Image (tube, rainbow, N blue to C red; front, side, top):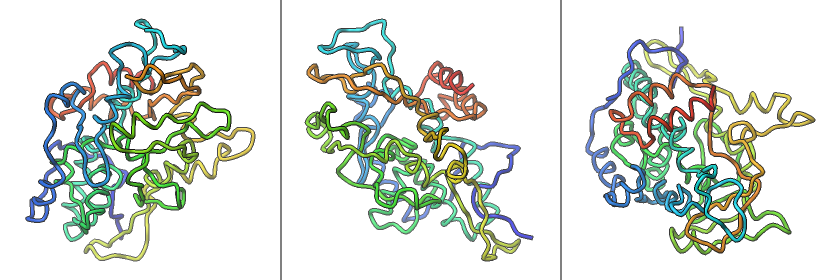
Length: 348
């Protein structure tokens, strides 16, 4: 008999929200290093989003300063004109608030995931470090990849739960800093990132409104550039095809592998990969609207962009969304119950 090491597709009778492991000296040192100090006032203004940075990523709070709700009711509102006019009754489509109540944003705080990782570690204690390191690569990538960037061999579940940036889940930076080279060929949480660049969907057309790089570069020190991979399914591949190794009942590797999930490969082998019904993952999970949207607040000279991708990230998992909504305070979530209700409604 064999059992796969990793996140198996079974239901847990009890879901634990604590899911802590033994703290080692190296865990403590790295957790302290990566946690940093929050700018309390700024963080409160941004609804609990971290505004600090580690060696590789910046917190979503840095992004929310320009890409969150615009208090002047100019930016991030569908149907904006140029010059811009206040739209107090307009459709607010800011990426921060749409994203923060998604499962992507709450991937590290997900109590089911925490409990499942804990269950795997208890079942396979000899593989604890490897299990937690693999699982955090997709569920806590901001902490995981920064730790490896700094030379760590493993990144633990406990580190992710005590690291405000890791608790950012699959944040803005994780997608928009993903390196285009080799994308779509790496799976099971294997990703590479650029350090000083933010990729986006705009600026690739000859007659398109040029990228206005000055605000982002001056505010956060990152250079926005066009990346055609941002609108392709390949950018989802690294986390949405997962192959794990298996062990026997004594915990010894069998040499066999188990396909835990193959969502990306299912798309590759579907009618949506090419042909008349071609559709990228983003086409469904981040639906585009034709209404022009000014994508950053605070800069009256910016022109609206079209098409605009809504950062909904809905799938089919309303059970998890309801669990998050019902435990906003105990899980320390940045989204409100009403925001979760919106994401649940979109999912349905």
